[in-house]
Length: 361
Length: 90
Image 1 (spheres, rainbow over the protein chains, first blue to last red):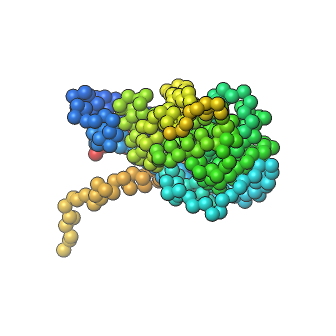
Image 2: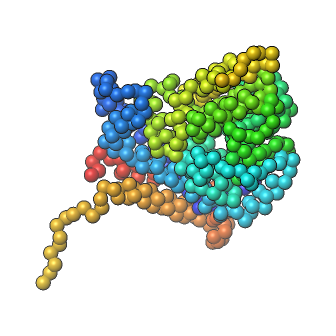
Image 3: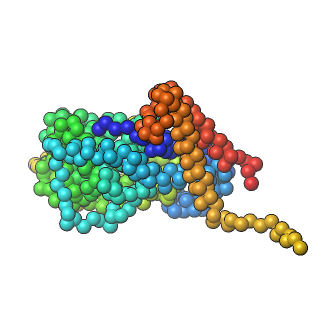
């Protein structure tokens, strides 16, 4: 997709990115404040259940709020969270005239979407603006482009040192499968990870499902632009409606931290049902809490669960996905951090071959 | 008869401070957009000698101008951060 931003949108996005990056210099100063305050000293933690994140929040946050630098860091991050969706949608409107015909044309091609007009969206997803993105996943007629391109490719990727696409592409190669015939990407969104899968396994048939029609339309454009033929479906990952035992690899990137634990379990169970005997499960997502020290855990929880528009972050980060996969019936489940700083965190597991007597729990 | 000034009072409540902070950053953003626009306009005038909104809207900064914009933008942001976080600020 060829497009150039107009001045107001470009300058607004540049401002938002630099506000985030420049304000990050306050974070090490607030870390020093935390250390100097003694809030995490053993004597002050003695009466606290360190597995109880609510108790940790109640203990640490009021102390950190005494730091002006911390309060201002919070203020600036709150602003970027509250404004990024609005800025992205306004930026789109500046260039809609030249962009819309191109976007509509790219929906015509070998990649097709099967819509689900009668689908009743699950309560954990319906109407919720994850990451505090104004407009959510579907709140604009081109929200797939707005979110996938303007928010993710421009704002988020620039803010996180351009690792968004690279990390997804690296993960796609981690399955250790030589030539899977059929791959399903659960919660594929606008296909940032699916594109990595297509690069890693160019001969495979790719399927993707997501609850958001608008995000799938952007996935469709990205696939068609490259001449790829994917099967995209509007469906919940925990209830795809697909026939069982038809995929060699069921995979997902950065979806599980947006699911309640009960739904995460249902998705793993659905993946087990969908995989052929001997097939592989590969899930990548944010870092689990158990590999982080107490202060890092508090920060992750504070900025994401409590203030970042990620209501299920804590449930995800405290779930043992290795044990869960084993419990559901997978073999050889491993739940571990990959790459610098244990990001992303990965679940790899295998469905037993047909001659195994293993039964799902 | 003159009206005596009332004794100093704090008009805004603590609950207003977050909103005030949000507004401040929003104004900073707007200021930046205008400053950015001004610099672009100057560059466009120098390049083409044309004064037109369309020219500014569609102007794509080259690497050198982008660097200049980035430096100005970061300076502006740093100025605001310094004010907001100064230890002597009441």
